[in-house]
Length: 306
Image 1 (cartoon, rainbow, N blue to C red):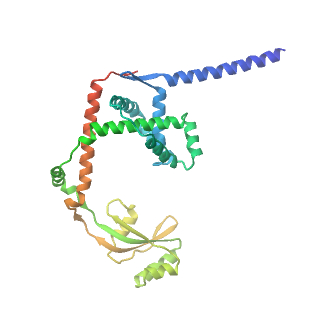
Image 2 (cartoon, rainbow, N blue to C red):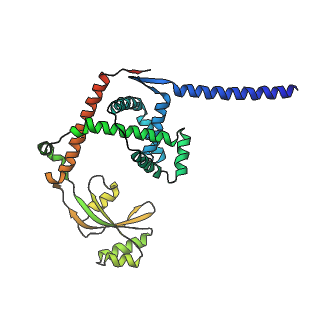
Image 3 (cartoon, helix red, strand yellow):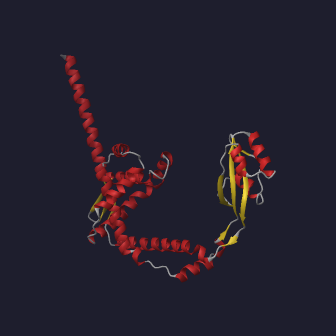
């Protein structure tokens, strides 16, 4: 009887402890960490924002790089969340509506990063989210995009004279580096690599040698100054047109390079770079105007970080 009472007591203790932990975690998530006008931001809002950011970036980074990225932006996420609330409040004042099909389409794009629907759902489950949470976040994003489009983006104008002026003042930055077009062969035998180099230098056709050794060549185009790893750049850029490098050992393989064309460094014309300049100036002005608008919203808002 005593043993039975002990078992019952232990079971009640474990059950009560588990309930307390659940209640504690629930209170921790519901803890208010900021107030923006009449809206509150809870710890769960911030956690969900982090999870959603992770989902959006999942297709762009490896797992380790993704977590490094998340850790790097975490200190700024609460401020970002406050700014998002201010923008959302403006969108709701403007009675902006979002087509549900756009939301569904965006969810489908995110799912593609996971391969299967079950993998996507499992990722959501691990982060304490459901698909409806993702749809809500995407709807918020679209609302913010639309109000920013109306208040900021649609009013930005970049005049042709601004593009020309920027080009003239920064002309030294619009210089194309020397460019090489070359064939790259990879073989795993030094003797084969030496035979191919010898054959190319004796005037044998590359295509014939590729057939003889059952190989393929990659066509590569690269500018000097960081587009290639240093040892490959050194090997390629010391060659003249139609010259062949000796075998370059990298790891377990041997590389052979044959230069087909050389484009010397030159000054790029305005017509070549004007689209890039326009995009740069547009983004710069967009960021300036958005920051100015957010500062105005903050001045008129009640914001309290707890």
